[in-house]
Length: 130
Image (cartoon, rainbow, N blue to C red; front, top):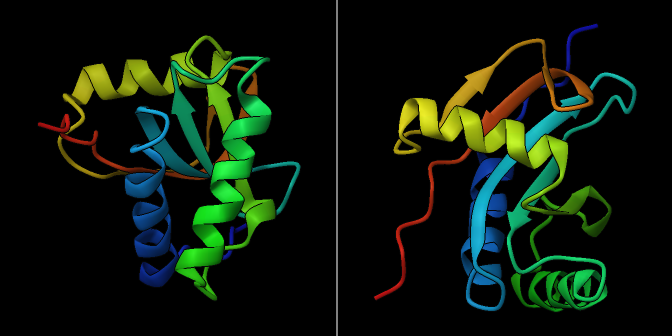
């Protein structure tokens, strides 16, 4: 199945959300995935600050930031927060290490940890805040 194309406006809306979210919970990596079983694009945000105790706060921050952003290209149900230890997050981090995380990367069908995807778009790593 061919995934619906991830458009520039969605990529930019996701990048803006990730930059703002990074101010509250430092983002280790972020990407769009089109899971084979879901049939839609999802924005994954990975942070070492996310765990069982902070996940709810993280989604609260996402909702608040999206209320401010008010983008028609991003829905709160598209955002998935992951801890850095999650198998999907570990697979993403390995790709960033392999390619130094400086450039956006597009992939076709592959597996991230336990998740089979039809397509992926990895954002470059965020530069550390001064």
